[in-house]
Length: 173
Image (cartoon, rainbow, N blue to C red; front, side, top):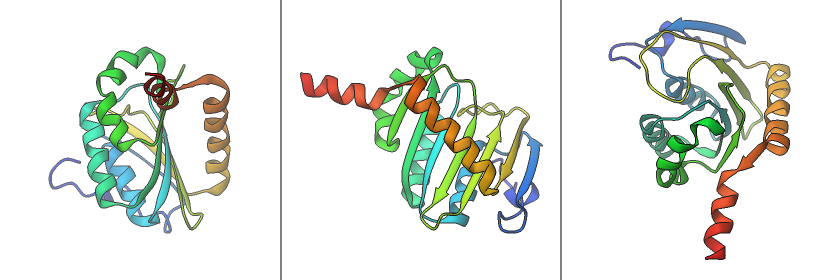
């Protein structure tokens, strides 16, 4: 988030507004993740993106230290594999599981221990470009369940489990 900018300028608490949207260059998807976790408490996260940057992984590391992030699952695109592999040692420290798929979606799904949910459909990759980005944010359970089922299908039927492959390779050596 840009200095002096408050997320409240763009988003109301999830309890106050079930669906909302924004278009700005002042918010990053990491800001939205942190904002959701502050409201929902200990949570599991599933996030999809075309690509990821070191800056986002670094921010996720600090979010994980400050928030009670129970699990963080990441689905990236095959075409961004070179960038993903370069960041792999750092990604392993903050991501529970990483999957590669033919993926261009940018979703953030958060489910708290208490069963509260948030779904974010955004235009932003897990990078920082200071460009105009838009997002739709919802705490509607039906929207969450629909997207969650589709992400689980993507993981199960159309992805390569990068974490598992690396663990097997290390065990084989």
